[in-house]
Image (cartoon, rainbow, N blue to C red):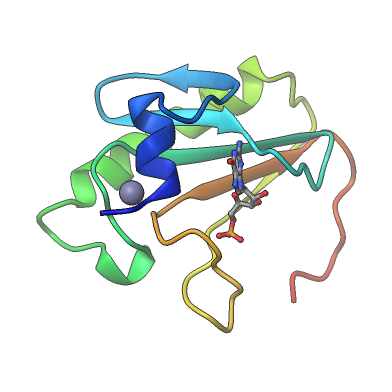
Length: 112
Ligand code: 5GP
Ligand code: ZN
């Protein structure tokens, strides 16, 4: 399977890591849309939110348990947005589930 984020997990494509454990990797987005822009991805390949189910949702729970620590460690002090684009209308460009953490400035009030 040819997956950019699986290659980042394997280390064949370098990334600036923010956090890593056995279930997930967090790394800085190459094209940041806010002063802090981190992507959190499961190490297991899950294509999108559409593929979350009872077999893999423990990984999603672990990611959300860790997001506050990742945001705090990255220096976010005044709130942040967590976004996951799913499918074409949402402009999902990488078909490996990822959660954007955006913060470090007042974000736009509108999301779409
Ligand atoms: P999506 O548009 O699928 O929600 O988000 C994909 C994100 O991955 C984009 O914000 C894009 O900037 C980021 N991205 C794409 N390629 C790379 C890469 O090679 N390295 C890193 N760190 N981020 C990437
Ligand atoms: Zn993948």
